[in-house]
Image 1: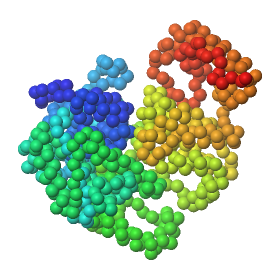
Image 2: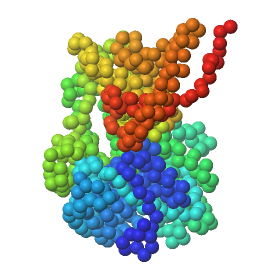
Image 3: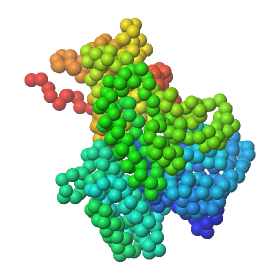
Image 4: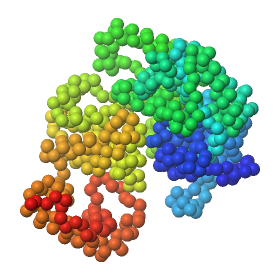
Length: 619
């Protein structure tokens, strides 16, 4: 694709908003190119969210975040591109185009245009590879707005050529973290200065601390019997194999000088194994509970050591205080007096105010750290573009902080625990409590049809199940009985599963929603709340039949005559059904109308010539 300001066309990949990031990366890989945006959630996140959150990843160290790699996205067309990080450009220009959304997408009416020009340095604070603080971004729509100014529908991304030779280095540090952390600065500086001239680049870089390593079950590559305090993983690339090997050896030498050991992978399989621990970091949520919020932050490299020391000191101080004042702390929980947000540590709060920024957005957890001046642009933009608050109402605005976060009532936990222990609902809630909402189950799920709706993937059925369980517990405590509507919704979730068990394999916390669905159906059956469906009832009656005198006539009616009747219906109605089947599917919530059921029943022809006898026959 030709880009203004560049003499040669550059390779790009087009994607609609709902495409999973991994599929875009795979498409680029098949073409021998690299898609730069690769967050840890690459298997589950979608392109639209990457634009809205300005996502990065391990390759951001070389090619930047989403905004650095967009050729254009909905409403916005890039006027010039430096094929590098946007903050390195002296000036950045965007052209905004508004078109009539009521007309055909192929030739919509042009409403107006506007040009935005701003300094490249305004996108990020000095020393940061990612910075999501400035939500306004000079009025640039979509990017970094966290879905507060509209919906991303499509984007075209610049893809890159990876240099010919790649080596992955894994550095394990066993000394004090504050002594090892300066090696990050040394490695980046070494590769940015001395080796860049030789064509050697750092194309991916990730830091994992000791707590992450324990959470994901990391196994050290060293012969030592303890886990390292810190692990650095990086891809060193270049077109000169000798120069890449020399730079990699120099990186290992830097690690050795700081109580570290280095391991180098050259082959593709070995390099992939080095990065596996990074892909498993989402599983740390299984080690936390409902009252802990995990957040990533962006810290200037020279200050990482200060941040680590401050966090460790706070952990130690709070641990001692909690042990000495356990009763007072519990009372504070019950009275609702425990405050969240700022640390209470003056030194760390100053560091957070001046230099620490959110990596995955601001949301509700970091809003209180921003001043009114820093959010003024976003408030003005929101008031102009979305005065009715149709997109993420209240988010990133005054009051949209942790005060709006849902937390369960501590006064009711004891009652709910007893109900859970004395009922079968615990067999359903226990397997799904560790769900990370990562969405890795969506691509393999047979009932996940995005064109129809987004409700019936395991990732979305689990929150629905959890909410229904909360409703059951509430209604049980107030002794009103459980609403019939809640049973119907519970049955609706349970029925939307083929029990193929394909969701278990990609799940980082090993949830098998097929087993959960079977438990839900069993509970409904035993309580007499299962919805009656004639087809399901007839099928189960036939499958459970054991006597030959029952099976033979049932088979004759259901298989021989029933299949034949369906084939006749298919032949007679296929012309009328074709138009409805070819059209985008409507929302599949609730019970489908009779007409739709008939269309889908006759859509595919039932097989003829099925075996006349069962596999086993009575003597």
